[in-house]
Image (cartoon, rainbow, N blue to C red):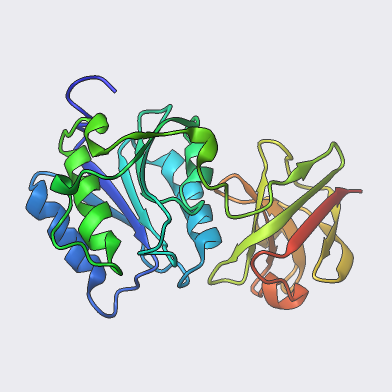
Length: 271
């Protein structure tokens, strides 16, 4: 990292904290206290509690559409344990700040990959005292804000070997010409089954048909560009707006129809 740090003045923020009891606002205040000029964009605070897989999918879906910035993400069921607090510099110029539990890796891969990883150890950058259960407030928020405000990346702490980082929170898809095996990353509020199958590698071509195998269900379904191209209540596969394969039902829930839960295997095969 060149002298002068990130200096972009923008922090994006994602958590599983929810909005009911105050932690999001507290973290905002901490960031603005240490770096008054930063701007904060809330990506989501509705990640299901403890669901690292869902948080990783939302991060990977959202960050490519945002300017290069500092991205603070906290879905951290291992808070206070031996898992490392990290800052990861990506090839595009972004820095992701959060726990070493796989949450950050899929987004980093979509931002060109990690080019440098550092463990956050510099206590002068943290809020004191550091709570054992609220690293979002005391470590990740202030460090992310300081980086966005111009702190040199090297000052957060020592380098960590990239190969030693905790892997993505899902099985990597197995891509073949006519078949792909991935998994359900999350069920959204509409009941769509959002998979980790990247359509840049396995396009879902509208107007065709695919066989879906998931949760003991084996059935042939159409593909389409959008919901209105299939009948009401009909299951179909599509290339969603975030570049992942998705299973949906026009005005219904694909998750309920298939009985699929996050983390379960999803196989698609071209007919």
